[in-house]
Amino acid sequence: MTPDLPEYYFRVRENGAFVFRIDAQNRQRRTEMKQVAVVNIRNGEIKPHGQHNLSKAEISEIEKWMSKRREVLARRDIDDIHRAVDYLNMTAHWAQTRAGDDELDQVTDDLLLAMHDLRTVLVRKKSERLPQEG
Image (cartoon, rainbow, N blue to C red):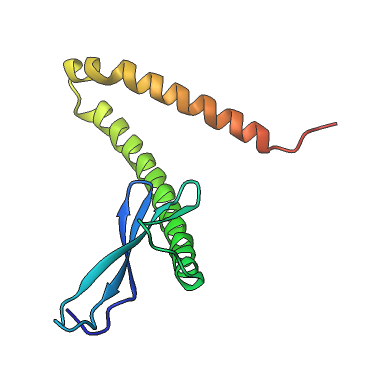
């Protein structure tokens, strides 16, 4: 490993991360990782691990990571939506040009219900954003 390791490592999990302090300056010259906290991105909770007391510097580093992580997740969310638009377009092309009757029978009702649900939500949300008249 490189000698320029970060001070903390964040093992990402579904709703946050486990936070480890990295120690590469020990007698054995081995990289050691000691867990210091568990982070929940959804509710912003930072829990010390075991008997460890988090310092202000550690909390600050964790909060910086949480902010950056939220930005990454937000970018991924919008990218996923753009991909969904592409998938809808490709699905329409497939249905029109390549799909057989049996294949269409397998997916038509599910697609129509999902699209109806999406349309209902989008129309409602758009109407909420429009300026209210009079």
